[in-house]
Length: 422
Image (cartoon, rainbow, N blue to C red; front, side):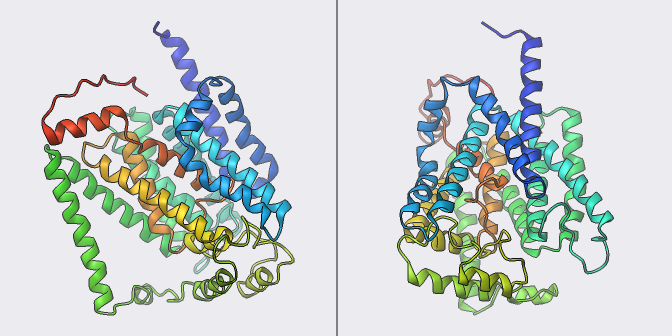
């Protein structure tokens, strides 16, 4: 039986409000603390109550995604700080469960609209705080409501990606596409004010690669799309090989824009990370047990980096963060997730990109471009962890997608029925 329009409209409004509230509180959790975290989780508890029968099925469908939270939990058995690892891993589980709920229980149009609204509110708040705190002066990086320019720039990068996704969706309302245009106008100057070259480059190249994917997806025949896509990949790998053969250092490009080629001390952080990895290469020191007050190695790095003891910090490299925390086992698990998502994205480009696959592809490319110089994907109560789960779900090929691909390559008609619209 079809749900009356008024009831569907109320359901849409309530889900949009709950999701927007949750994401806004998550994005402000560094400033508001525990209260914001509780507010972030509460709406998903309510949404879960209305979908109790579906929860076992959707969790089972995403078991592969949950391997790293599981590994983080069992790492308390060898952790240098078992109690903190137990707490942090439980928080990581909650974050991933929220990400799975957001992807599986909320329609993409509601999820993306709520995320856009929350991000725009954060941009306004950060700009206001920056002006009031004198962060708009020359040579001072804008941090907004965050503790660092990198955290602020990461959020503004996501705002740019979400805004582009909305503007490119012709099925969106004029109001929401107008909000997307506003995001595209607001995000670039805020990224520049944040002075994070890594975030700016990641957004630029993610959008460039995405436009190439959209262009490839316009070819009518799947074999042609595949060949063009393969050609682009080979050209990219050839360019990287050329840089290696000619001994051209990508770090030299930073000198052109007036930035420290050591990436603001990252070279020392990375060298110390390798020292720690050599001590416990297989399983690591335990999930989030390294950055704790009283650990001599962590205290030294906090001091060298001129940040307060106990501040949220990392090695500014997703792979080194994982190696230190969960060792080679964790790194292999993470790379397996990355390769699986890359394969799903490659499969998605073999047919025209819809809204949710466009969003997921952009988010995944942004994250992959950031991983060599930043972390955060597998950090509890982090918007990137939620979005990684959403990308994992949105890029999963459906029965219809697989049947369409078989039809495109073989010419055999498909009998798969169209799934319900989200």
